[in-house]
Image 1 (cartoon, one colour):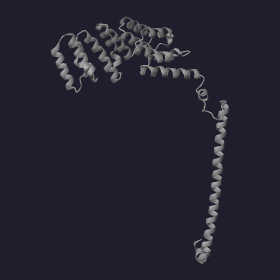
Image 2 (cartoon, rainbow, N blue to C red):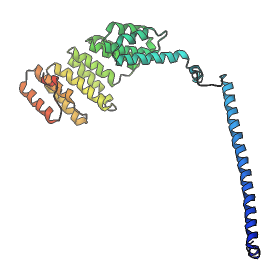
Image 3 (cartoon, helix red, strand yellow):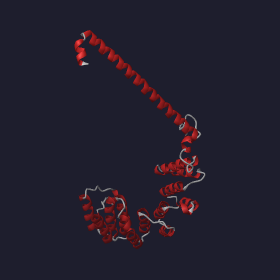
Image 4 (cartoon, one colour):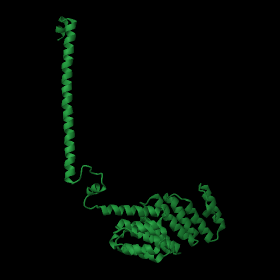
Length: 297
């Protein structure tokens, strides 16, 4: 106590303080040893739990080092075969993007049992390569219940690019009968098919049917939709209708790009209206758009 330390000599007080420090240090080391033992015990228990988990899935000590081990934990619905199909699908998709169409086709033909995703991917490859006959070969070998909105949209786009509007229309009707609801991509492909074949009236009807889907469409999707209908009208030399859609884009807040001005210019060219074409060209420059070769031609 305070009074006791006052009565003791200074040396005795220092000795007592040193003894108290030693005692406290011993208690601290004992606590550290106890905590260390508990930490080691938790580490041992954690290792034991991991061993039990490995035993439950019947794997070795190096669990996860082998791809087969990882596949076994994905559940009964996924097998090594499914992994290989995903690899082939990725290869076909990359081949289409890199325009290595034959390489992608060979990869598809080497797949033992294609699934729906691989069928859709190779259809996209055929569409990019304009392989009309091969696309139909894939389509006929594809189980009907695997044909999705994407599948039909790709085939309709193929028919549009090959200028086969009757087949595009048939596929669209078949899709509806199968209970599938077309999206904006399906409609724009159908409109493109009608427009490329000079059936502007059917293109206009398809656009009006598509209007409800424009509400939730992306900006790019809406731009493309207006582009294809304007191009369909421009091919007929119908400048008034082409311009009506151009004005409507501004009212709906859809950004106008150079392609939309090209449709206006094409409509003027079809109707031999050079004066209006010059005005459209001037408006395009005022909008800050740089003309390209198509703009001048």
